[in-house]
Length: 302
Image 1 (tube, one colour):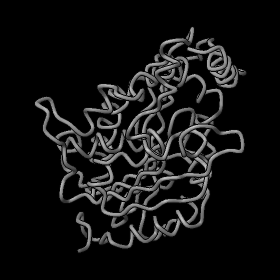
Image 2 (image 1 turned 90 degrees about the vertical axis):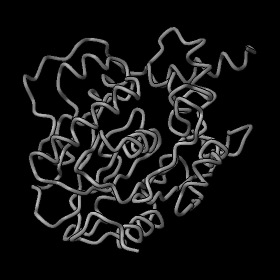
Image 3 (image 1 turned 120 degrees about the vertical axis):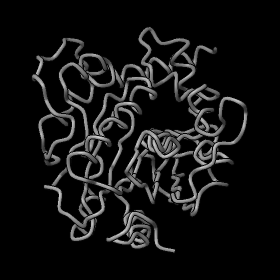
């Protein structure tokens, strides 16, 4: 590893660690993991985001995470579940949620400790989807995932038993690192503090492989009942070097061949990794995809 690379890694870690507190937060008590709360809920604060990255166990014990319905559930509306990325929160989706047709669609968000292993996050999501189904008789939901939120969403779709009774007609992902993030492997090797999700998104990780290949080496296909809209971003920052990307994830990773092959639609946007969440064209694609879902059915319209 060159001296320049080490300096860049330390710069990244300095930015990530700035203002972080490793002091455990007070226990909020037995909070239910499917609740009705708006985007301004205090649980989505920057302090809790940092805790979720650097102290996932404390985040879990403090019960900050779960599925949050932004409005009281209404019969006949299809749930749209938004899943954020590392160091993110449900507030990242403010623009896209504002552009939803709220007469037809029920906005919900999944807030989780983004420093935890993605396997653990996936298990928590599955449990919460089950609770959503039991409590509100939700039989269908659409997943919209940003960055690693797309990976987590694909894992849920690939395991029907994890969402028994709940159909997923659409998986819409934005800037997902299907092929991994090489800098995550550098962080795992050289950082004095390593978070579990870095291991999972490192290029060639077992987790990433499991999203496309099963234990015997066969390709894992998305269910025929789920349409995947794959959105990628490609605006580099002025100081970016190397492969084409969006200043966070390479285009090659976002356009991992198997993910492309299984996608129903692929759209590219000349925006950065975070700007894709605030883009009018992305909102239009989301609206286009949602129009294919019958409000009275759990199946995508043909």
